[in-house]
Image (cartoon, rainbow, N blue to C red):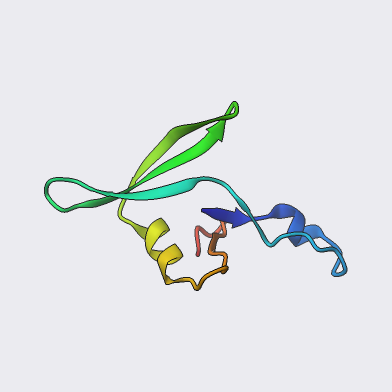
Length: 81
């Protein structure tokens, strides 16, 4: 999952600063009752590590709706996609 890049917000218009940067990878999981959750993994000290488990599947759902090569990102201050 990507989050809005603070440098993009403050960059000059001519800069080619990416609009978003990768924050973590999300994998959808489903428990025995059929409830969905997203397992978040991120690079911590050079290794992939589980950093959170969130109920629901927003992270994977929004990414699945995007076209190939598209970037879906979260705006953290508003918690908007």
